[in-house]
Image (tube, rainbow, N blue to C red; front, side):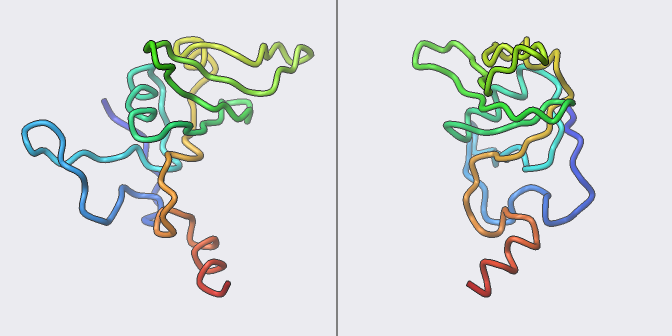
Length: 123
């Protein structure tokens, strides 16, 4: 599974020590700005955050999550004029792809784009 990662080093994988998964293998979060194209990648994304956000190829933002019973959901504001129902599953959302990760659940300042980090430093 390959992810298209933006060339900006600020948008690369986390620089802090990574949590360990099974077999003591470091686990990495899908970075903000990465492209995802499969339902499996969306499942990986929601494993890190309760409500990550992606945008589809038309620029529509979607909140993606799994319910307690394991069902996958993607929701946005409905817009019947543009054939957007407001709710779909991961497979339906992938049909609107490729998708770009806008928020991967990482709220640390180091995960923000450089301009945002500079604003935070002066605040």
